[in-house]
Image (tube, rainbow, N blue to C red):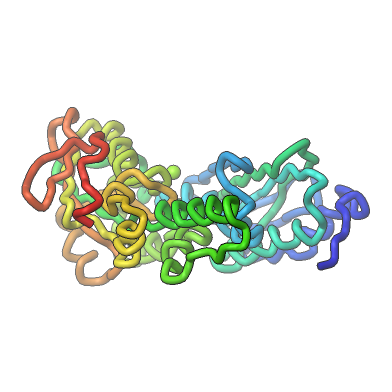
Length: 344
Ligand SMILES: [Mg+2]
């Protein structure tokens, strides 16, 4: 494959190359890349601003993550936090630190993923910075979005007896990562061995190309439902639930049998001898939305949406965070290893 060194292009050449591929999807973007700052129209309501930093070797491993997927995922990770405030993402900036290990073609791959995500979510890249890095790849994404004042969803807004909802399914991204780690180890031990990835496409996709739940935010808006509190599931269900509970000054009770886990997640868990519920509770990187609704909104969501599970409710005692098992036992959400993998 062709390899063009970055220094042939130079920083300005690289920025021009990126800018020429950027497309505008929002009328609120007045000026994107190409001046000292991007210019956007300040909508009515609140502006949301969120930043994520991802570092090679800490947040991603380029020995099994394709650059295009990484670009896509960086955007998803960035806009997921805007969605978690019940907002609509509009613009992003992306900054990168690159070592000379990366060619122009590699940077193109990365940005092809970034632009694919921009297209899918109707947002645009309006700026960023590029710099050289001594060692690994560094990526920072900032997302800008808007939300109507009366619809903003903080972590702190849950009320007693509100129903806890979660979108999609959980635990798959973590198991996808475990499969990739396993195969990397096999490869390091015996490079001629064929990777055993077949049958695990679902969990691998959930790890490598997660999706942000813009669709759910739009559905809730169409139903005129504002979640009373919300957070995105980046660190695992248990930890996100504890955030909602602590910020809202309440307890939580969730039911094991209501936690959405994909059939392929059970399969991967069995093969890896890991508990599927432990993966769902503590795995992370699912980028689903966890939120609470008033009891009176339950029927509307039940009747008009499909990808939302009702997993529990907010309880009065702020010191309790319980998982109620199928055997009706109450287990603290902080407990590790309660689930034996043989049960899977
Ligand atoms: Mg978040």
